[in-house]
Amino acid sequence: MEDGGANALWTSRPDLIPGVLILALTSAGTLKGTWALGQSFWHLRSFAYTVRRYHRPVPPALRALADRLGLGARIRVIATSCPFALTYGPRRPHVLVSTGLLDVLNEEELAAVLVHERAHLRSRDPLKNLCTRVILARHFYLPGVARLRRRFTMGRELAADRRAAALHGTTALAGSLLQVSEGPAWTKAVPATALASDELLAARITQLETGTEPSLRRPGRLARAGAAIWVTALVAACVWSAQAVGQSTPGCMF
Image 1: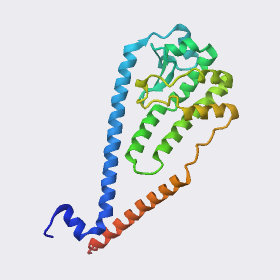
Image 2 (image 1 turned 180 degrees about the vertical axis):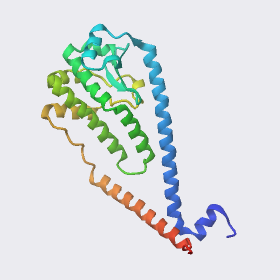
Image 3 (image 1 turned 120 degrees about the horizontal axis):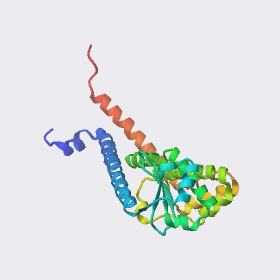
Image 4 (image 1 turned 60 degrees about the horizontal axis):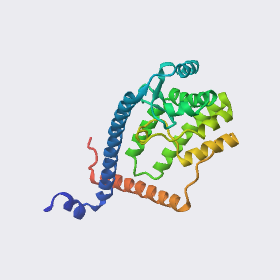
């Protein structure tokens, strides 16, 4: 070969090009997954700093309720008028409750919210959300990745709702849903349990009304056809590359 590098590849071994493209795609996925992991830890660090800065002592009534529900020292209170609660921390999760939430919920509604968050805490959902974020970022080139993440998030929220409704009834849980917001902007980037969204809120209300978990809306025909074509192309490229490498590799000599 007189020309080297990429020119030699394109002119003398075009059969290896699909393999090179797959290698480039997976390398980009590795970089994207690494970036997502680093970004998540950075957001967690900033989140923890904000919680420490604006934390408030746990009121005696909330402490007693948390102790009764088995949360104990895992409860945190932050001073903000925005009514929200979430579970955060991949290594040792805690439940964060805003003073705004304490102002608008009665005791039964607050208990339903805490049982919901306790389900997230016991299932270690913040860690699962972190892993899901990194894994799906790593495999960003696969079709349906965003849908899988939405399905996972919705499934965990609906499971926690079922637990809260079983212990405190649908009335208390519905009352809390109507008053809980999605939280301040600084909470949205953290791989904690899911906050409110229109799609998630609609699914949670549907489950309360019907008693069954709603199904995620199926993608359209065009989306399914595009995904099938993309997967077929990836598989064909892998098979092509394996055959090309096998033909260019000399047999083993014994």
